[in-house]
Length: 263
Image (cartoon, rainbow, N blue to C red):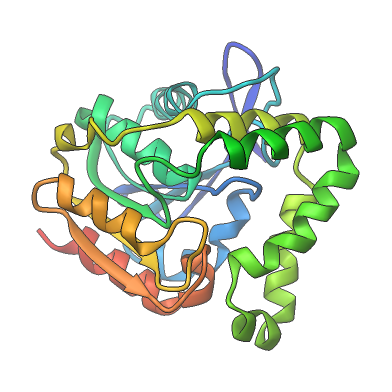
């Protein structure tokens, strides 16, 4: 496994694809790890050197005391790029990863070639959603993560997909149960506090917004809001719940590749 040393600990990352190809960074959702992108890798590495990482508090990466902020997580991405001597890259993030992508587009657009944000919004939920979850996870620890895993299937996938693909659904939702409770709660706070509604217009890099038509966590309306406030932004919707990259699979990958490859 590969790690980059940050000031407070190690950030876990993985490279796939030819070393001389343009770099595409993939950023995971809240409660998953870099393997949430496994379905995309075969298609993506035909065109890109894919850089995946576990967001702070997730997977094999550092878990530091919370709460975190999206700004902090964005600086982690910049530190990763700096450590790997990557001046510019494409960036694709889903949900929380989409918030990180928005922050990068607003604050570090000079480091991006193109940006894809999926199943996200300029503001996701409100404190009445996040605070009870944070309190429960910090109180009950691993037991709360298991309960969240069991509840997440209905949020992350449509019922027909989960029923037809139980192994895939289990693989992804098991990531949630394996997530550090402290790291998860700290990242919940980062999502809770993020609000880019008044800053979106400063994103100048080419942007693709992807939404799931059945997503109750970040409904299509949030994706349309981003598209409408970023000049020239494109929009794509897929029949999917919250994890459109998993549920839409090849169609998702093809749309992202078409956007990134279009000069």
